[in-house]
Length: 365
Image (tube, rainbow, N blue to C red; front, side, top):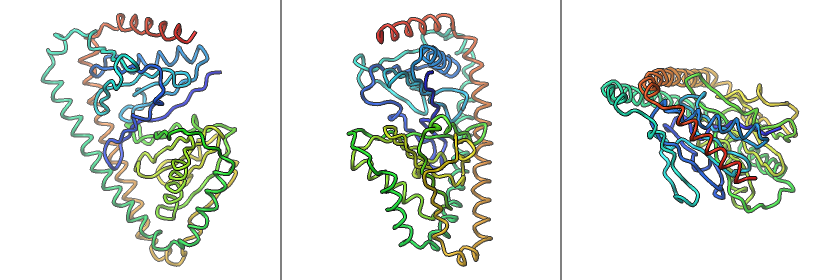
């Protein structure tokens, strides 16, 4: 059975749109196809169908979903990183790095009736402006939520016994990395979920399997978890160990999950501060579980209860308000697509897709 995974290469974050597009596939990729064209021209459908065809042939498929429309694709990686198709339009503009040798452009704009699109120029310009404004306001809300998050963190930073935190970081790191061999590989950085028009969406259950050895941690912001993930990430990079680093979809400066594919081990933050990963994990049998809140001075935390609760509420409110703006942007985007869809020759695009598929399958066989 084909291995199917679902990840996000970009996200709507407290730092604005944040992209890990460069890590969508490995540098050794055989061929990379960059899809160009406007909204509604069929880029996502093209990639979905290619992914489905490869999966039916038994190849592994990694779907990279769009944070601005979690039912639409930003990219698809096929097989053992043999081929990749990706959306090379804004806000994640991609151009060929090695044209012809590795990368090539598929311009779906060749298949549209320009006159039909140009007839709606004023509406297209207005909607494009309105979409941009919605995202600008969404990112302002997420910045506000980040400020509240930093306040929330500050109370636990003050209360933390960092001598105990450091001892446990060292101990857990040694346990997690025990008997791991150098692989001379670079790290991949992605998101396990995203803040989308449909809310907080994660597909982490496709990343972690029932056979994965799970090292779990939990705790409040500022309790020491961020330091743990930073420390282990630096060790992995220093020792050139193959790893997939999955960043927090709200704040990409923080890490929620580290996966070691060669040993099938995962270190995950199950605190559910923003995203609820626990409910989606294939099992809750942890190889180790460490609660960082136990290293905080309880009396001091209790004295800040009302302030902590207020900060939590502002984080939650900021994210919810941002989602409303992103949802409105999606509504405008759907309207924008309505001017392109009638102008497209989808039969010709499907012929191109079939020809491309046949070429790639023949190159493998």
